[in-house]
Image (cartoon, rainbow, N blue to C red; front, side, top):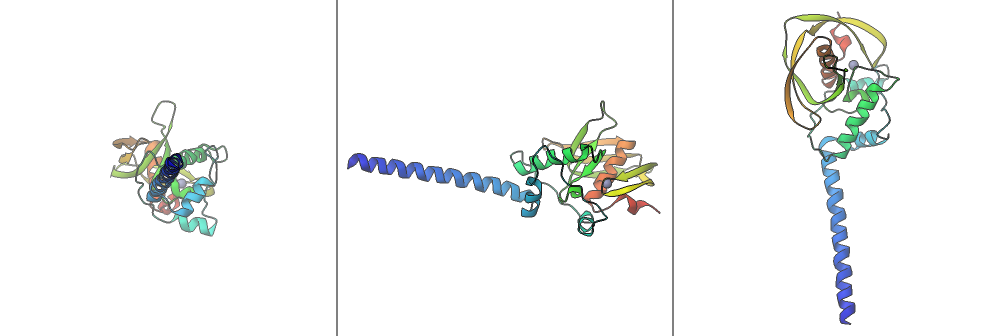
Length: 209
Ligand SMILES: [Zn+2]
């Protein structure tokens, strides 16, 4: 009877610990994800594996074009947010995908209304792609540069814009969540201006006469 009682308590205690462990884990993963993404966004992000590109949303489909015109919101950076880290990887896969071959991409272009972009740094050795979280432009030079622009969300078009600043200053969180400020110029500055426009629902064709 004594042995049975101790066994009973031991099993009950282990059972309770296991349950608490499970609940703690699910609540944590759910709450960190919920800080950043809606249920629909989580489903969209997790629908493909980490090695696959996501679908690029285009302005010639009505539902896509409505989303592309919306403003995005900031991300709450958390290195343990698995949905966030997964999304960042998939957005990168999408921009370098052979079908797209872009030089930059913004989260709303794959249906996610969050302030995240990838930019190819033509001003750095070997032209690396880098991710920028919550990027904003804090300074635009008066001097402008003409630039031929295309967009993954606007099929079969390239136009010359005249309104891009030659030099900008940007503020953002890097891939590790560290806050940074930087000056960027030339063509890379155009890519930043193009992608950050996307985060505000603005497309490059809005800048044409
Ligand atoms: Zn674009």
